[in-house]
Length: 279
Ligand code: PXL
Image 1 (cartoon, rainbow, N blue to C red):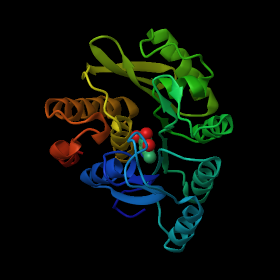
Image 2 (tube, helix red, strand yellow):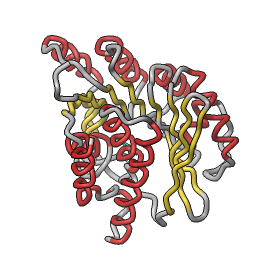
Image 3 (tube, rainbow, N blue to C red):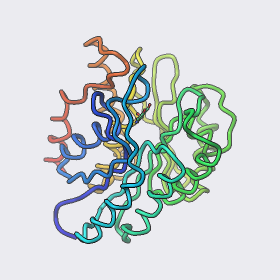
Image 4 (cartoon, rainbow, N blue to C red):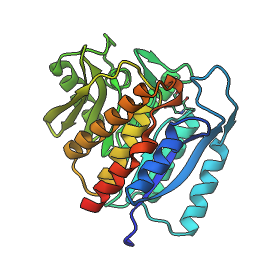
């Protein structure tokens, strides 16, 4: 492996907002890691807006990986996010088969839904496919809705006792995921990210920001993938990622940004470059 760390980021490119690859690219780069992007789709903006242009890239995904094989690209981490179809999940599984080495970390952000609702693009078959993808993961980062789907638990809101989070995380780890981070668990004043690793667990809490910005999970998972690639353990990576997301969300709230714009992490990318200096 050469001295430049490299992440394969498999996600959509949504141009006019901050989510998926428009979050992953700057964050991964700021941490001194090369980000090789494999677009699953190209959109003008994410699907939470009233109107958007969408160009599916499923049929081109394999062409990317064939070229990357010819180039003999090696990855320290394979990181996937929003996937739009059964075929796309299959493409990610094929990609892992082709490129995973003993040292490659697999980070799966199972973007499937939010606030108790599974996205309308997600069929029952895709929810089952996602379990298969999660079984390959070193780290999986579901929110509560996604954790419920992956663990076959009935959704009962965003505020849960730690025992319930532990039970869900344990079920997800039984699928094969080595570490589980259940994100965005909320009380009135605090938001917590619950980490489960081999039976050990810990919650990392930050104050609630009154607005819920889209793409926050993508920023969080991009920081986690990068820090994992740099050798951080899952607890340290989560502690840092939670603080980074909180700082960007607070700033976005103070600036009065629209929730669809996502969190303006650009102003604090320096926190990542500073951190890189300390690694
Ligand atoms: O942030 C998750 C996400 C990523 N990509 C697209 C989305 C969404 C959430 O709505 O629409 C295209």
